[in-house]
Length: 97
Image 1 (cartoon, rainbow, N blue to C red):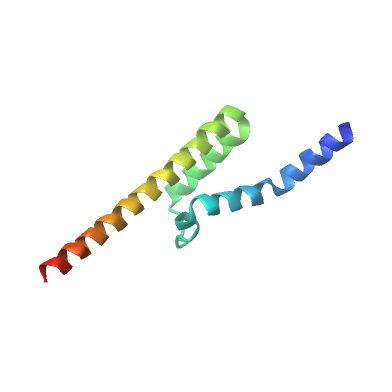
Image 2 (cartoon, rainbow, N blue to C red):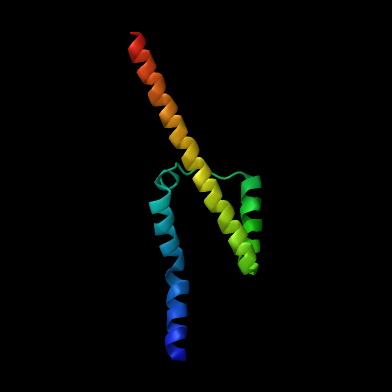
């Protein structure tokens, strides 16, 4: 039984990142397709600090993960509203013609 738990834990650690990537791509496809820009020095430092906080404790990981999830949902909502506004602007200009 202990061997099974260790084996499962090892598999989860080795493939957990891949599973998280696939889940985030399904939830936030626009984020996954965003162009990759070189991060600024401030962003790199902030990312390193958040990674250390998340790695040290479970509550830290929950806070950091929740922040990332909230940011993704916020960006998704803003993109949806922008598309909706663009569609209504197009419809209004077509009606005026």
